[in-house]
Length: 462
Ligand SMILES: [Zn+2]
Image (cartoon, rainbow, N blue to C red; front, side):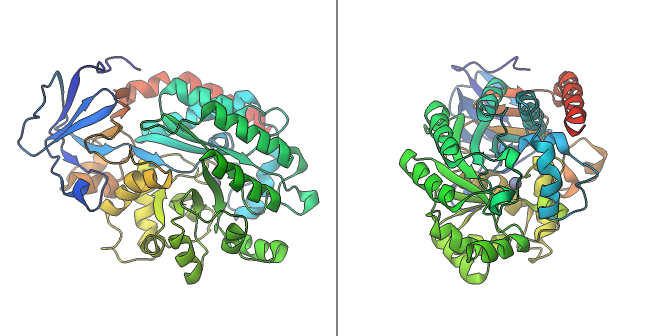
């Protein structure tokens, strides 16, 4: 699958795309004309070519993109890869968050290293085939067999060549202490903090063009102790890594916080030292006006998960108010037990439709959701080297052919990608390397992996 990659010393011109979106909604990167395509050298974009123009640099190789839409690689800001093993479980579907979780926790307590390896691989391929070049995962189930879950994930993303932010999740508050998860999937605060430090030192690469970032991610206010929330923030600050958790997903969560912690989730976040630009939150739905202003002033990032929020009937994220207040907003498919798919390009369509239930049609455009999934998601993950097609940025791109029946008769190719419902990329490049050159051939090559994964899923549920 990695054949025919451009040589690091040769330039490649992705020439005259059918349509292109830079990733930016305004500013110089939005105004630049790149209708003639982009030129790539090594892992970076070195030139944007205006309509009808030739590159100024010498071109060694060309790819005619006149039948494909060119986008920056999509960036998924929140997932739980392991949940690909528990999609559409009859006992869990059609339930809201808390009972859904209580049904699934005992099953997840049986996860093994092999489950994590194959689930990570399946989820990454699913995301890549749908146009994602950067993936983030929030793994928080550490039963006795999974002490090296993040090491396994780091090996898989490195092997696949996809850019990643892996978060060391945690649960420390079990049912016997008033939390939601059972004892079998929680760890002590010291175990969690020691392993967090070990993983940061081993894997976190903060350099420009990094292929792997580490972040720390206590699961949620209802599954970790207050001491762990506070200590995790201290460790993240000391080590210069980002902080992530679920927050404001449901009304139940707000009620839990008021009843058990004596304060609402945003007050709790502040109390634990989390209010700052290093923090990004999955969901971010149930905030009042004052809380939105406080989150914005702190430049907190929001991983907006439209599909998951619709499946679990959680609510609609107030994206535009959050952005206006100063928050960064990106998109995410969320875990596969609440989506139940990891299709990133479809997530944009779902976000557009769901957000139009709250906002006017001219406020939530296809450009808006494309911006959230690229430049917005990059900012949420604390990166400015990806998410935009511009000179000096990483060469992470997706190319989409509009050859399905659903595109026949479409007039605006960029809008068609979202409104007609694209589901698969044709080609995908990460850091200047083709990871997918022919999507159909890639799917064929994944058949064995899919069979193994499905078998493991059946065994896990028992
Ligand atoms: Zn989640």
